[in-house]
Structures are given as C-alpha cells and as structure tokens.
Image (tube, rainbow, N blue to C red):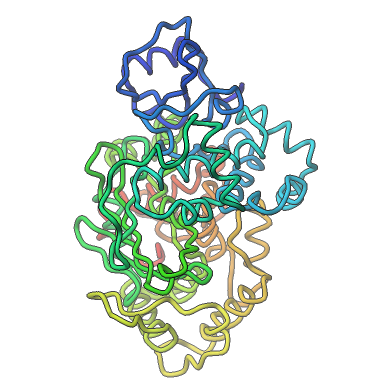
Length: 496
C-alpha cells in the first residue's frame, strides 16, 4: 500500500515505541489475531508474526481485533492524505462527520466528484480498506472509546457513535471483540446530568500546546471562548445539541483531555453526536496533523526551516464552527486583531443566545447563520460595507450556498466563498485554511507573509505566490510559520 512505510522501518518503530508513527501505521499480530498501535506496551512480537497496515480499518478488514491495552480508538486520527490523493482526504473527513452513517458510498463519491468505483479503488490504494469498512471501523472505535471512558447507557453510545440501531451496535462489538459491550466496560461511578463526558484524544509529537493556546487566546471570541495559559473552554451548538467544551493538555504523553458537558435537556434524551464533537475538537487543535510529513516538506527550506526548528512543531489552529470563524475573518478585514475581537464580542452579545447559567467568561452561544442574516448590526462599530458582507455571508450559509464541508477542492471552495460580495481571495483562503482544514490554502496577498518573505520589505503578491509553489501541499503550514515565528505578539495587523 502506498502510505505504509517498509516493514523493516515499521518494525523498528514498533520496537522503539515511536509515537511519531502512532496512527500512521498499525501492526497486525498473526499469532494473536490482535492489531496494535506502535506505542503498545505489550511485549514486541517476532517480526515474522507482524503485518503492517496503514489504518485501523485495514486491520479490521483483515479480520484482526483491536488491542485492549493500547486501545487503537485513542490513537491520532488518519493523517491528511493531501500529499497523495486530496479526494481521499476529503472523503475521510466526510466519513468522520457521519457521511456513511445513513447514505451510501455512491452519494459520498458524488460529493467529492468521483465515481463510486474510483473512490473504492483510491481507498484501497491509500487506506487499505473500502469506504464502508473505514466508516464501520470509525463507528466501532468511537463506541469503544465511549464504553471505556464514559458511563453512558449502551443505547446512547450506539447512537452517539453513529450506529442506526442497538442491534447493529451489539453485533459489531461482538464481532470485533468477541464479547458483549458491557464486558468491555470498566467500573465507573455513575454520571449525573452535571457530569461531563470525558475523552482522551491522541496526537503525534511534536505538539506545542503553549503556542497553540497563545494563538487562539489572541483571537478568542468574547462570550463564547475562554482561554488561559493551560486550558481552552467554549460553548457550542451542533444541530440540536448544546453544551460546553473544555480541553487541556493530556495527563498522558501526546494526548489532549477533553470534557464535554451537554446541557440537561440533551442529557435527558441523549442523542448528542459525540463522535462529531470529538472530530471538531480535533480540528481546533489540528490533532490529526502529521508533523513528520510537514517537516520533510518544509524543514530544509531556507525561509521556513529555521522557523520550524524554533517553533518546535507547527499546527494550523482550526475552528469548532466554520461559520463562526468566517464571521470572525470578515470582521477582521482591514482592522487590528484587538479591534476585530471587540466588534465580534458585540455581535455575540446582541445576536447570540445567552446561556441559562453563565460559566465565567462563557455567556453566550454563537449566533446561528439564519439569525445573523436577519439581525440589526447597526451601532456595533461595523462599517456599512462590512455589515452587508456579514449578512450576505450569513444568508449564503443559511441557504446552503456556502458550506464548510471538505467535499470541494480548495479552488472550488475559494470560488464558492468569493461569490459572496465583499469576500476576496485573502478572506477565502483564510477561511478555507482554518474553517475547512485545507492544508494548502494560502492567503498570498497578506502583508505579514509578504514582509516575512522579504525580510521586512514586502514582496509582491505575485512573487509570494511563486515562492509558495514549492511549499505545496503544505502552504497553510508555511503561512502559520511565517505568521507565528518568532514572536506571536509581533504579528502584523493583516495576519488575522
């Protein structure tokens, strides 16, 4: 398979418990019928008994069962496959969002602009399993994590993980683990409506937690987000589910500890899409990034290499909600970051729904698109043109003309965003980078990028575009390096 390193390299990584390979490769042990992460604490088996595959789904497809010690469900997610096949990357994101929980592969293929047979072929080539097997594996691993780490009822876990019935959930767990779901559960205290659901999210080193929080804190949405030196907190709405999210550096290496608190109404009739909430949380912190791939592409560049070494690992800070990020980007056009933060807070205070019980600085939910589209935004310090752009953007999102789905290519997404009056290439690329998760998005006209590339004297946008060609498909990471290093406090105004 294209994306699996050679067996000798894989086995050495397995012997060394190398976390850099975690989530990129899995080892199937023929003598036990179990598949493991490279960091599994169990004794390393003989090399002759090892088969290496590029995904947990590929291991499941071969008939191997998930290890209960290293717990593949807590491994970092599948790396962005943009360097080999962008369509696979987009389809994987859609699967993570539940695209195959109800619809079939034909509909998924159509969303990424491919035929069903072609999509299956690409998945087998790059992932080692068909889209259906990948989707089934993601549901199963999400369910296993909820069984192990929460005290939710099994029926709640089944639907939260994306299963369409409790029977299918039971059958899948029995087929994979050989026991009933209840047999996998550790002894836990009962949850009450005021208890959060806690999850552990894995990631690949290096991960600069302080740098990530500093970037997000500088742009925190007043009333919605609260960020301290070691904690990220926010309110969220996802469908009919509302709640609050808290993320801290994990108590175990290379992890994030996540607490999801669903409001009491959601808890009474639990249908919260935990898998989608976890996926969006991963996106905020770019937890599925492959630092080794980024370093291999950018580390030897004369402009970027020294910055990458100084940064100690680079991630693209994402967004839980694409609409929220888009509104923030539009407000930030041609104003300072501090000024944009102030005006964004005013929009939240006027248009967002207040929490029943305010939680520190978290007082509101971010307004939904249809509410903002019809809102009166006069008197908030926004220009008439900016108000028109915000309302047009909100209407486009409410009507489905603009989405934050990864189905479209970067060029298609930029074209879609630029169709909104007042949104140009800079804003479109910025939204594509942070809200959609396009690793190759690059706002070439940005003054900060052009100054960094010219050692203080800005080069032209055309020169910036030409220079960035050699950084594909990781131009977004290049942009973050140029913005964030050496000192976040010295970011130029344009680098919103």
